[in-house]
Length: 414
Ligand code: AMP
Ligand code: MG
Image 1 (cartoon, rainbow, N blue to C red):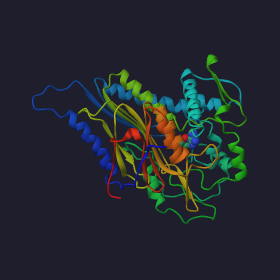
Image 2 (image 1 turned 135 degrees about the vertical axis):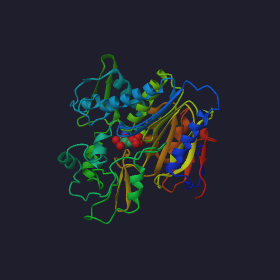
Image 3 (image 1 turned 60 degrees about the vertical axis):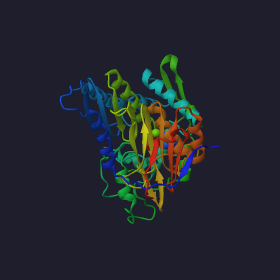
Image 4 (image 1 turned 90 degrees about the vertical axis):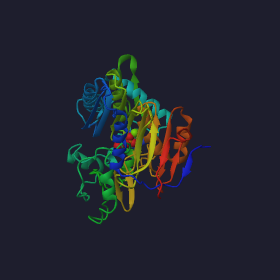
């Protein structure tokens, strides 16, 4: 009963650079002044930095845009420490290391955990914040995240072949889409052929290179269940009730970061802004000419290209894709988003972009829909007021929810 629209995949006709130019042009349009016209009191500020595990880009216009953007960057650094499970001093790390005991957490983290549980329930467990044991076993964690010995212990792939020639950083300037797609594309074309029979390749320096042992996977999966995350709001504490459970907020942290960024920008009087946290975008206000922002939707198989343009204002837009963190093993692509019901990576879709009122929702739901696949994913999006999406399957068919009619331009040529 989905009202989703299907059309054939369209070839991206614009490159990444073109997408950036698109935006730059948009700003320029509104800032142009007639000769002699008074200079507007608005500042325009742009900042790009590495934070929350990605390249963050913030462009803002307002009376105190400089201070606003600086405050945002500082806030994103704070959230990195607070929410990254690999940072030893954050609330999430404390919860994971507590061996099932109650842990006092900040009101902020408590609220985010409550929201995570709500979204897990809403998605029937397709999004599950306790997915960490399975993510670790597959090795969907970048090299260097935890000590090498521990990494080997975790998934047993330590003697597998390593990928080479992989760019270390992530490309800036992506308007919508996940992190290091450029690296993914360059490697997907054929960094292969090396190593022993069980080796695979990963373009993004992941620890994992091959599916894990089925017995180990079953054991890890048994620890995944958001219902084991108990929250005692009255006493500001939480605990993981089942042995070996661990929280991974990787699927919502950047969305939360985008929400906090927007809150700070508004507090500083910013009238229009784009916040892009490597695929988690918030488009605040409109373009200077009053028309909606235009965000490029990344092509999941063509690095640096977009397959369409989304017109939005005052909305969060998050993309989950299989082209960022993944490895290839025996010709099959295994991406970093796992189905908490099976323990296996979700295989049906290549990318999901969700538009929602808040970043946390857009982020969690893009991950959830990626897991649910076309039919169930579209049904979930259609059931939620104010939430829309663009799904791209492995054959590059594009499906769009009913509420985005007229707001997406798919590029011609394929
Ligand atoms: P995203 O790129 O927002 O879709 O988030 C993906 C990240 O969230 C992964 O790198 C994992 O750390 C984590 N993750 C993977 N699968 C799930 C899932 N089904 N539910 C919640 N988090 C997940
Ligand atoms: Mg997500």
